[in-house]
Picture (spheres, one colour):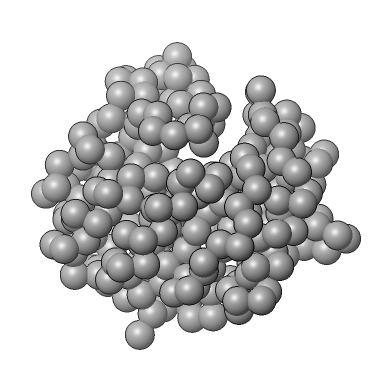
Length: 239
């Protein structure tokens, strides 16, 4: 298990590492920077750098964590990447089913693969499924998410790169919003955040504001109009 500073989860589990860019939100990928750094440090798991690599030896790890945790799956990759074999994706889901005392959070930009694989997945109740929507051009990712069998469905509007006016959040259980961080971070406008916050409030969707971002994200903080927004889905486990 790896602990994490990601505000909306408690731990990470990476049975897959490596990815490739599919949309504008990938431009300054933090995982790519980290993977290259870990490779340079001689970390065996990152011997391939940011090339997609499956790690079968990592599959049983959650079964050994006895304390219940919220676990972000593949913080260093995308489980639904086209280079991850179907069979391996199903093995990941089987581990999550067995480790039913944890809550697993999956986030993808590859909603088409989610839609395809979703037909073969018997969705465990302890798995939350999400898609990234960084601007309005990516809103199509919501359709496969909404039609999936996941009991908890969420959206990560991070990095939020443009206004997304009047998003249709029907069937969505949670929304995360955050600005880009790290070198060359692109700015996020306050109005874009408020649009999404207000949409969540009006449509009854729990809202989590992760960060303003920027090159110095800690200094920028995560207060929105003087308060933190840390709302979570109503149910920890779907029924």
